[in-house]
Length: 77
Image (cartoon, rainbow, N blue to C red):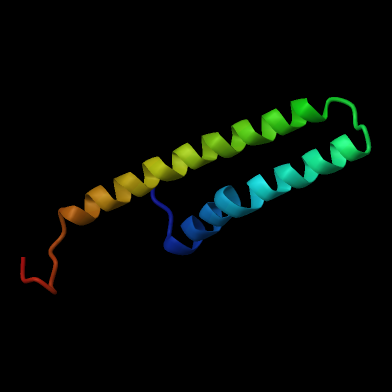
């Protein structure tokens, strides 16, 4: 399965910027206001972030591997 660059960039932003900062935000609020089981929610969010990050890395490696086999017009190869 391949996705276009715009969707890839959105997923990358979600995984690298939004989810970690949202997790810190929820963790801070949870401990500040003594929410029940906040650590369980944080662990779940962080595991999801790590899982999505792994999938994005696999997709990136697959994309770059395909690019190595293509003709490069700038070098004439």
